[in-house]
Length: 203
Image (cartoon, rainbow, N blue to C red; front, side, top):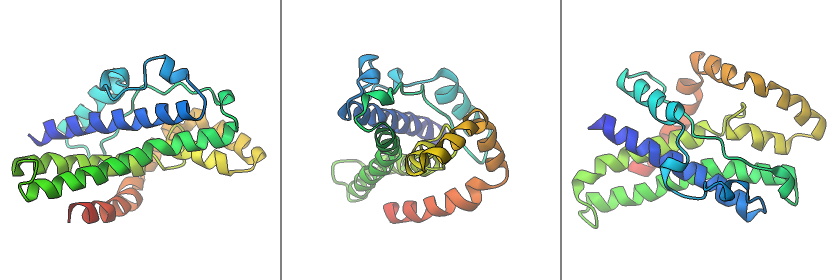
């Protein structure tokens, strides 16, 4: 049951994350993703067969210490923003923020289920998985390494010349993430931060 809850919670988290990117870009003037049918919570519109389904399921089944994956990239045209760099930064932060807000919503649901209000107590375990996964995805995506959202946030804060140099590392982004995970990024940095927030939300 835990595996099933993890997979469902992961798909919900990914759909909310991508929708937040699309909706924010749309509100800031870029309709590219909206025009491609991505402004929806329907996970089918965001699923990448390998990154959203196959890889996370394999990691969960094999009890790999770090479960990660990705959705189809949200197409964004920064030139449609009034202020391209600021628009990209705001659009990028929207995804992780959506996950952290969703974790808060599921925290409310968890408390309601523990009191027998609205939800049966049996639903509590599912809500716990939703909180865990949304918090981890939200914080993980703030890591400033391409293609994670944190990289676009950092580029929006850097001076133009520094941002231009930083973006060159994009081609090595996935390799850098794998190396950082192998060196303990998840256990030493992400999980301690996530654990504090998770404990607060499920207490």
